Length: 116
Image (cartoon, rainbow, N blue to C red; front, side, top):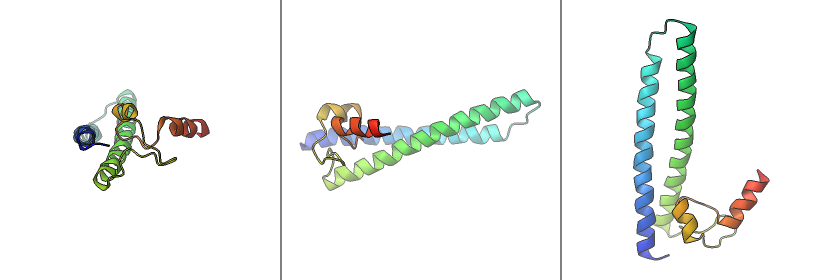
């Protein structure tokens, strides 16, 4: 992969990383505020509890994506970026444009999806 392409993907990943960190911070602040509310009835409690569960699920998903991005940024630094972890072939440029932190090529991704 050319240096300009690596910079392109690194910039995208760094930008997404910054956005995820901001999102997680905002959700955590919101969850903290929800935990300090004085709830008057069961309906309020159920609503806050439901919102907390949804927000927690979002944070878990974003933390997973953040971890994947950090691994990918390490691969860029090590020169291993864009290599499928399963077959060790090059991951296509178009696939990386759609998901810059992809670890599988299209063929291997389909195999993994079918075995789940």
